[in-house]
Structures are given as C-alpha cells and as structure tokens.
Image (cartoon, rainbow, N blue to C red; front, side, top):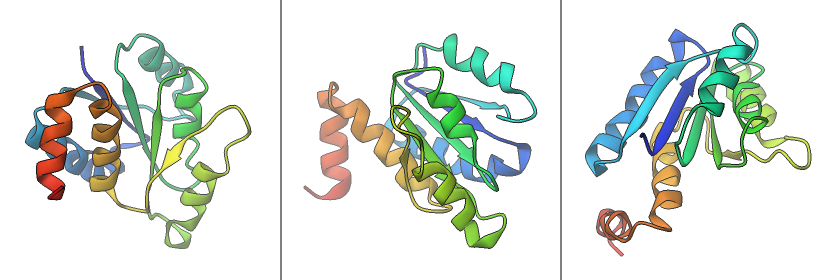
Amino acid sequence: MADVVIISGSESDSELAMKVEAVFKEFGVSYESFIASAHRSPDKVKEIVRNSDAKVFIGIAGLSAALPGAIASHTVKPVIGLPRNVKLCGIDSLLSMVQMPPGVPVATVGIDNPKNAALLALEILAVENGELRDKLKKYRGL
C-alpha cells in the first residue's frame, strides 16, 4: 500500500512528478505514480482513486487543470493540486484548482512547485506518524 498516489494528467507532467517522488524517497514515504487525464481517461482516474488505499492524492495538471477536482470527486481523502505552467504563466491552472465548488475541496500549492506539494502531503501524513513528524521538524530546522 502506498501512502501517497501521484496522478499526472499527461506524460508532459512527468518532470514535476519525478521531483515530488524525489522528496518522498528522501523521507522514506511510499508512493505510486500514474498518468491519467480527467478529460481523456476519466474512467482510469476514477479506477485509480477508488481502488487506492493511499492516504493522500496529488494531482498534477496544466491548462484547464481539472484533474485534482476529478480526483477529489471520487474520495474524501486529502487531494493536493499541483498546477503546471503551460499557458498564461500557469495562472489558468492555478485558478482552476483553487476555485473548486463548495463540498469538493482541493488544497493547492504554487505553480510548478513540486517540493511544496510533496511537503504538504508529508505534513498531512505526519499528523498520525510521529517518526515522519520528527523528520519534517529536522528538515525544517524546528
């Protein structure tokens, strides 16, 4: 079982996904990565989310950036949106993620900021994991 599932909307998001994965490797946190589009393969997104025991999801997407919202529509677990700069300096992606309708929240980090997406996921996991919490405190110098 992976603690975190990362879903990238397309192969072009893989660079950001790899940076998220690097942080998880550094902290010894288990993860799985998938490529599935909210528009081109919505059934695959639904299947990944519904069949996962992960505690947190990260959705990486650009343009309309519907993926994190699509993930959130299939779970009550935390979803983190990582907007990607594809057009309009990434503002289109950012706004798509933060302007979710009431009842379907998505936590969103800065544009092209995979490190913060990973760290936010770690902070969520650390609520119930003292060892991880200690690693985060050391990492942040607290």
